[in-house]
Length: 535
Image (cartoon, rainbow, N blue to C red; front, side, top):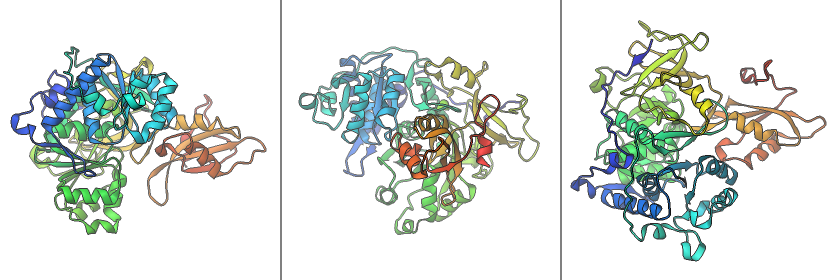
């Protein structure tokens, strides 16, 4: 049977992302600090941010970017990311956010697949951005280097070229329910990355679903170390914090010392992390050197958080530790332990081994993967494991130009089949127990085995290969492990295999363990039997 969220439905306005976040900035909010750059000490108020977004939209429109066009963003977390991202959406265009660790080939693949007409980046990433832009045929004036020399000097516009003219934002018209706002790329339940088409309504809905459960207010200072190019950082940090009129302390990458210094120096109150950060916070002795007493709430997502680890962080830092669950295809949050479970549901927090309850306005099912039958809510304890299905306004429109993958993921009733095995308790609280899907989660990032297998097979000394997630004995984390069959008489070492892959992919996709075997186990239909390799 299906079960609904225990939280009251929320209103989801039929408006664009820009209008939802900034259409009602009150006079008293215009002077509030929206963005903090701890490196330079510079700040951006809400009034300044809205002005910059409008100017960016005007500049993009003057360069021919409008409704139906796609613009790529290749950048780590910097204050300008917010301006560019929301400027693209304000202009009526679609933003495709690109992993800042991608190689030129990976960038080009996303630009080509999304049909991007422009790419925005920064100087440290210029080399790979330029190579990718050249590969897909983008002209120099369509590669914007925000901190570059400028169009006159280099042929590439910079931030001054973009924002200096302060052109008015265009009048645009589109249906928020169907117009694609962002195209993050996800491997879905398996296979190569696909463009996830998320509408303005999807993004507005997910922020609206989160607001009563996050407990974030205008007085909160939120550390933004999760990448904005990832849907978790994009929705849960960038959009949700701006909707609450909080302040974002922006970090381009995770560094433990800088993370701790920023919490201490900026009196950070809320932190959103992935489990590897929790490991450092629970175990590293340097944590004791900092005053982290301003922190009252920490939420983990992107990968499962062990209950014992989460409780260790909560005890050491004297804060409220929570967990959520989601995926790009769900905009991304579908389940959450609320900021105040007692106030919202009249009960105590569930164990951190759970992902909490379905967010408002959603319906769930737990479905037996063998029979396709719905599993009932248990009278006590936990249900049998089944695949988690989610229906709601945060479910994506579909995969870009891939009707078959969309139909395989979203059924005729609008339920998205997550590919995750879950159990549920009598209250509707969900526990993720395993993955049906083949994706490997390394430090919160998706690593599709099929992509690495295809790459390995291009090596002239490799006859066959399979990649699975394996648990690293030292860290306890899942890592990509390759099983390799060498060509007859070929001499090949584990290090050579790892170096070959590392030269072709982003760091999080690197193979981190190699085992040579005689043959890859496969089914009669030729499907790799990964479960046999995991034994």
